[in-house]
Length: 418
Image (cartoon, rainbow, N blue to C red; front, side):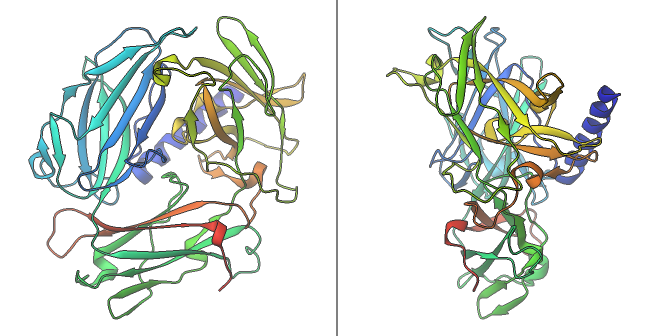
């Protein structure tokens, strides 16, 4: 019975995702540690300016030393393929083999590490702003995985701020993003039709706010002072573990054992939704590969460990599911993140293969239709520290693609009620 529920859930989830966002293609299980970074090398969702670089890397754990190829596509605001031809947004060409790869060294788990930098000698320049996707293919032309990124122009300024919700029902649990777009040098004709905005919490493309239109204009400014329509569940600070020393425990790791590889057993977590908020510094769902001892190349000398997660949660789930959630797999919900109930210990458990490093994670409840309840286990607290990004898209009358003409960033650590 439970197996049937999982299969039905996966159908609803992927069907919903593809319709809603033209989702990235999820990597097979032997592809791990996909890191996709911009010039700052901080977020796993690169948002770069024209002329800057993006860096993609991943590990293949099947030991085949296979050849992989990349293609780059340009997309509209809603992630449909744009009307531009490849020659209109690219100087050079793609569909090129990844030249740079190396095999792991001195690790129990063998893997091949691949890297790609864009632009490069083949793809010399991406010439248009907008939404992009890089797709990785194998030798047989089969899609292995794809990743999204954005290129922006500096045509407008975006002043963003985080407020507490004005609705008393949500004042303790939600954060509201308000912003002003200032365009003194670019005429934004008919902005309710030509301007779109995208608001992201912690660079997570799975839960954006995209349907806002300017409420009014003052001179060259577009004003967005929404409350409910621009509100996010505030969530809670992420849990974390750090296994940079793969042989020893820590404040979040209760024991280590060695079988075919190292097994890292985390302390059992419990639900936090009814507890008082406690500040705990995190990196907003991200992860960093690192090891304790000095090394010449951490990308091939960091080992893989089997991470064992356990959670105590006594609420009735009915036909819902619990999953581990974080940017370690691009916030993907699938069978590898599923927490299975163990009647002997009365806990939910999962084991997952992850590369050595510092990881943020949380637990979420996934409904039967694929929607996610982010606060059912962790809770929602207005004090939670979150990063917010506002992107401004513009398609002038008669234009053939959506430009990204500006970006604003803010953080809820400076939240206010004004």
